[in-house]
Length: 517
Image 1 (tube, rainbow, N blue to C red):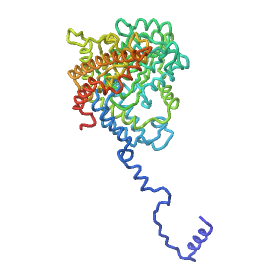
Image 2 (image 1 turned 45 degrees about the vertical axis):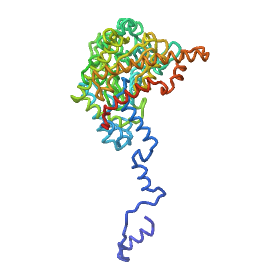
Image 3 (image 1 turned 30 degrees about the vertical axis):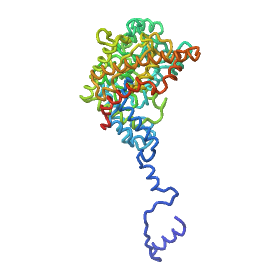
Image 4 (image 1 turned 180 degrees about the horizontal axis):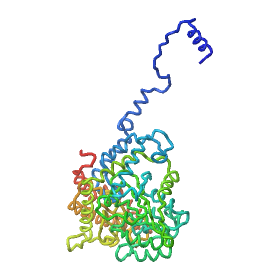
């Protein structure tokens, strides 16, 4: 208070001067910032605020509605999950963990994350005394890196399934001349492989290699393996070489949650998964880790406890990430609740039925009413099939493009025996997304026929493209570039135009889960 103010107050107190009645009104300080214009900017919905982006999204919605989605790592999430993803939970910063944040105002963020952790353990039937879970990892590949960093020092040893044999980049893929995955730069990685005569993991060679190599972590997981993994055998191998068993179940976690396929939790030390594939949630990840007794000291018989919780949590934050994505964690909590419902179990059972029907139609000999394709391992035990197209004289890159032009999303994939990851001989296809939209076994028989027609179209166009390239004097007329240039957008190919129309009309009759129009 100013000196004059003090004097005035003292005069009033002495009765010399009368108190002056002061009327105050609450007014906002004048500012060049117009609150009204700000509110208009911030409250406008997307269609009005940014018509360009809105139009792109609407086009993508239309594409999703009229496409057959066979990519096994994709799905259609629920409206409730989308609601949570677009909620105010995205506005909050919350570095740290529930009860120990570096920002104030996290009461409800803590509630959301704790609920997500609780539901994650419940969904997979895990005892919180024996298992913990971190739900902050942004996606699956980072989640794996965080686990490696928690348990390994640089240049420690790691084993995972070879990428051309169905593994994943995040398991440490490298070629003889280049370290493709950064994981192989930080750690020493060596792959195990399939028995190419059967298409199954060669556990005997894996054990032999692990005994010599003695890794600290063995990863049991895949991105293009259509059979069940023998987690018990993997556990035995890990125990023999004193390695941690990390199960990466990103592709099949939804099937495991519904008990449609066996899970790894009875055998693994750590389990990682994404949340947006068969689990049908937002694009996030979970890291499950064991607690309690790991083993006994053979000499003293004393219990040796797991020490995973602290290192893994510290690896996630502050080791690799800052603030978690709270809208994703909240949406994941919603998806995990849905994964505990009877409807989700029915859905996952249908995913398996559809995959088996799809595989049968593709692989049975033509004389038996099938299409005669070669499937790696001969069939499937899960949600995907991996077709080897080399016997058809074509590759996955060309077929993937033609499928896209007729309204089918699938992806090229390496298969055993491939020499190039850019022009692989395989095509990976799965059933989760279209099962979400209501497809049954009969529908997937029809899908197999669509794929077969696309392969035949691809073969004919490839021959024409090679001939055209030869006439131009191309030294290598069979290059993928020549095929793509000849194909263009497919509009000049009547077979493509016709098949695309058939696919769009058929698939458009199946509603998207969040849009019944």
